[in-house]
Amino acid sequence: MFATEDDVLQWARSFAYEIGFVAVIMRSNTNTGMRGRTSFVLIGCERSGQYRSRKKYFVRRDTGSRKCGRPFKLHGKPVVGGQGWMVKLMCGSHNHELTKSLVGHPYAGRLTKDEKKIIVDMAKSMVKLRNILLTLKEHNANSCTTIKQIYIARSAYRSFIRGSDTKMQHLMKLYERD
Image 1 (cartoon, rainbow, N blue to C red):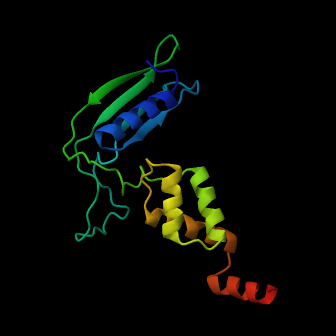
Image 2: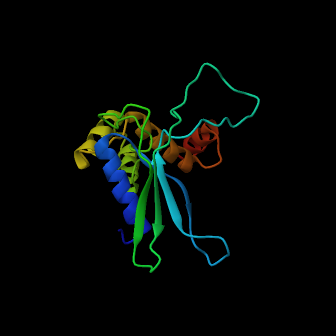
Image 3: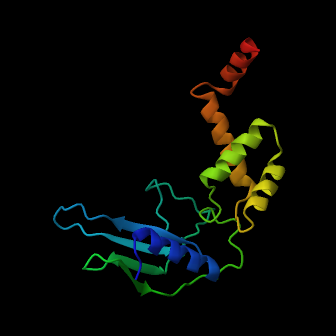
């Protein structure tokens, strides 16, 4: 039994990382007092389910998907007395190999707020991406972050600074200012 929904999620993610897959929230709901709504969280493997195309008639045949069908599911719900959460295993099987390393998994390699702050500070100082990655790995040895995620974070910061201007407009503003 767990104290909160966050405790359930932290336990499931840490257990999944040890085994070799990534656990994500598939669905959740919060009891708001409306009829028919109860609190629950459905946690599953990131690869469970079927790929759904955004455009119904445009399906590319030359690409793949991480999704592979058979779902691993945990269902968590609050205990009736309100003294914690209980977790039930709905489906415990996987139809894909469990990985030895989670490097390259987008969810496992997500950047924390502190890591994003480090990237911004180092990007301002014109530090190379590989050195930023080494610094992040020194701070957190268990980090699954890749250089691509650092590149994307740096790019997002630059576009935030630029605002709605194009790259050329921003360059011209900097040229006029300096």
